[in-house]
Structure formats: C-alpha cells, structure tokens
Length: 386
Figure (cartoon, rainbow, N blue to C red):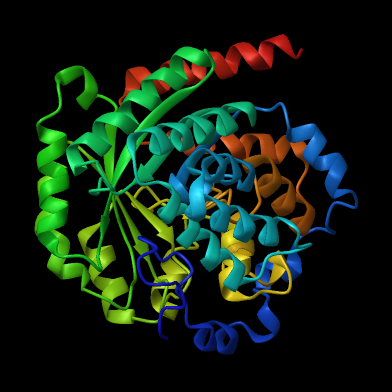
C-alpha cells in the first residue's frame, strides 16, 4: 500500500492499495453496476448535450488543472536552458496518444518546476480559471497549498491566487469561485497553522473568498489525528472541512476521519465493509463524497469506469456525490467529459446528468447568499432553454 505519487507533488489522490478493492469487488464491478442500465451508445453525443449545461466543481487542485498548452506557454516564457528542457519534456508528453501514470508524474514535476514566481503563478491561475469558466462551471471550489514558491512567501502566494479568483469572476459573469486551503499531511503541522494564520490575516473582503480547508497529501505519511487541532481551528474560523479519505487501506484511520465528521470526503476508495454499507444509505447524516472518475481510473488502473469500486453503488443509491475532475490538466479531462463518461458507463440520460452536475451546490462551502445567486443564474439558464 505504498504511495505511488512522486515525492513533492503536494497531493496524493492517486495513492492506493488495489489488492483489497479487487478482492472485495470480484471482477471489478459492484452489484449495483451490474444492475444498471445499458451504457449510452454515443459518448461524443452525450458530451455535446452536456457541454453548455451549468456545472458545479468541488474538487480541483490548482496546479494539476493546468492544461499542457498552458505549461508550454510557461516554458516558452521562461526561456533559457531550463525553458528549452521543459519544452522538450512537454512536447514528448503532448505527442503521446495516451498518458501513463508515469507520464502524469512527470507533468506534476514539470508544473512545480515552472511555477516559481509571481508571473508564472498568475498566468497558470488565470488559465485554469478561464478553462473552468469555458466548460460552463457556474460554481468552483479551487484548492491549493499556500506555500513558499520561488520568490513568493506563503502569504504572497495566497494573496495572488485570491486576486486571480476575483479577476476571473469579473471576466465571467456566470462564474463564482471560492478557495480551499490545502494542508499537506506529509508536511509538518506547523505549515498548516501558518496557512491558517495567513487566512486570518486577510482583509474581511478577501477572507470571504476562502471557504474551506482540505487535508490531503501522501496518505502513507503523517496521521490524521496529528492534524485534528488544525481542523478544529479551521472549523472555529467557519471553514468547511474536506478530507482525502481511503486512498490506501487503513481502516482505523477511515474510522477516525468519519468520527471527526468532516463536511465532505475526497475519493473514499478503500473503505471497510461496515463503513461501506453506511455510505450506500443516504440519510440526513450522510457525508457527501467528491468522486473523481478519470483520476480514480488512472490511479486504480481500472479497465473501465464500470470497474470503479463504489461509483455504481453511489449512483444507484442516489448518495450525495459530487463528480469532479481532481487534476483536469494532468488527466486530460473536463467536468463535461467526466459527466459524459459516467453517463456512458452507467446508462444515465443527459437530463439525469444535468441534475447530478448541479446537485453539489447542496454541499458546497460558500455562504447561502453566494449559492443562492448561483442557483438563480442556473434557473435563468434553464428558463432560457424552454
């Protein structure tokens, strides 16, 4: 169950131990997946129907959402030997028909090498935000770790990213964006405290853009309980809590996370049987799950999405899930593609998918007034389609 993500990638949604999942789900399919309708016959047609529909994205890592074209521009801007080397590496990956997990690792390393100053971070953030807006995402929660980056302090990093969030909302009238502070469990807890200090030091207007805290990183390092004081402090600051959960087999830690009751769970792939049963029965106490189909397929090395250990069950049970992209640039996806892939795999209509696309507003972290405005915009869009 060792983490397969490279050191220094800053997150580890790909960490996994597939042995248990494959043993528990013989043949890679849940009972629910077998019982679902025949898959939609035309993936491209389904994606076309969904392209203009409003969407909500709750699990997106800023750096991993940079498209390879954005990275190529950053390499060109850098110039010199390092820029040329980055361009060669990018061109080699861009020429591939499909990307292996190893290629994804290379991209994560390239991204962090290229984003080392204010200009690069601004360019990357603006490009990522524009990409989500172009995909008709009406509400986005974007996450990253405010870290010292090249010439930037953690506070300067946070200020800059929030600048770009506000600018994106001005460029795209349909677009509302909020920020989650990512705390890396592989780093010292004091780094998380400093990130919250930076949030606390923001002006009241800026502070409104920060709505949550994400605990992520290499799940084989650190321990959840070590970061509970930070999570409690974040709650006292009225931040929603989402925790990457069940990325490797660790039943004790999954139980600890659920006992803490974060507002949302990320991935939730490796779950004990008893807990799995509770997560197929939607109740008022259900914890919503951020599910990232392409990311899960890549990191679990699944032959198809129908082999996902839990997604079919969650869909059949109408469990509160948010379909998300995770690292859209690295995994060559968009939220439209994720929705279409799920619909194609599990036989869902475009109408059902359009409803799934906006349901995450019910468990988003922004305050009610912000979410009400998003709902009003979506209602106007629907009315215009009648």
